[in-house]
Amino acid sequence: MPNLYQISSVPAFQDALKAVLQTRPNLSGVSISIGPPAPGIAQESKWISLLEVTGQEAWAAMGRLSVEETYNQKVCISVVARDGESDAVNTRNIAYNLRSEIAEQLRIDATIGGAVWQAQIRGKVEFFPRLGIQSADATDYNKMVTDMSYREACLYFDIFVRNRMLHN
Image (tube, rainbow, N blue to C red; front, side, top):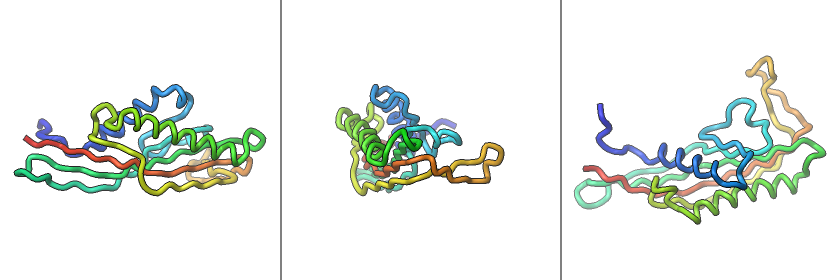
């Protein structure tokens, strides 16, 4: 059955944002995922995950021909380093530099190649420095272990998205 109209811009936005971020030279070597990173990726040195989306939609005026959609895309940036490779200040600075790359991309093209009307960093920012990371034991993924030889900087923030979908 053909899709009669676009239900939500979330899949197109996430796919477009991931694709454009992967082309930025300063993000080479950074794992970028939609949803939590796959097992093993979380132990890599730098990653960006597009996590949950919360929002709403409403019929726009003028005869229910369009739906206006607004939502927040939760983003998580993690920078992991082994003791001796980096200190807490350095991992924090790297995390904020990665966030700056995302902000710059949104400044250059707030529509993400036409996927949405507008996207911008907005709202609460949360930063968590951590000593040690939890990782799955290689033989049993249900068993979590904490490796205290790692330092991690976790940065969470929202990208506010607005879009209007036309229904013919």
